[in-house]
Image (tube, rainbow, N blue to C red):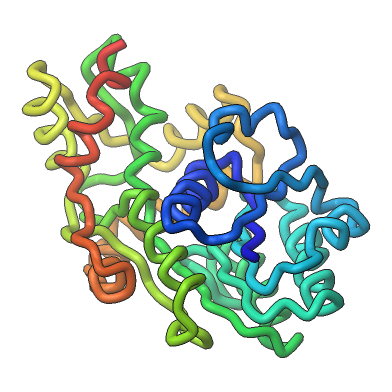
Length: 285
């Protein structure tokens, strides 16, 4: 049995779908079962619980031997994911497949990268089997630009002319499912990227072609980026992490392309053009 956390999120939901399609025994761990109505036709179990309440994690683990671990980024994530790790030890779970991030390291410049590193170390120190996934930036982050692309034909970011190997969350999920399904991936850490490194100017050109209308990329300074995020209510820790990340992106530090999607998931990674075609309706409404 596989327990999927973050099952109502983009990656977790796709992992759940792929596992169900394969006929794998799977259980979704969710705080609000009402958000799982979309999965009504899938052959899955639902376990209601909260990572902040260890007893609910224990209640979801009978019969579980593998866990997909993914949470939204927030300052409590180390504690929340630690609760899952400790419960996994108590239940005799054999493997955790954890979604971390490309910047994961104990000396990472971002808080999120340091948090992920802390949990990865805890998993290893606990003696659990593991597969750690370090994806680059999600193509789906472009969906946050959809309102301004639809209304202004423009999107704004602190990217300058840097290039980045963005990846579709559907491909991240495919790698996760492969890791959950094959013991050969135990003890591995995989970088996960798209098939190409593109600039945001090139992304704008692709969107223009797909949408059939001009789309412009407008470069922001770090201060302009901070101001826009504050105006949108982004938490301060997240603002500083984003500014630091985009400084790395604009300096081409995340521009390398890794073959993990092809080698691990045995599929061709989706291009940004394919992502844009699949989501074109969201950029025009």
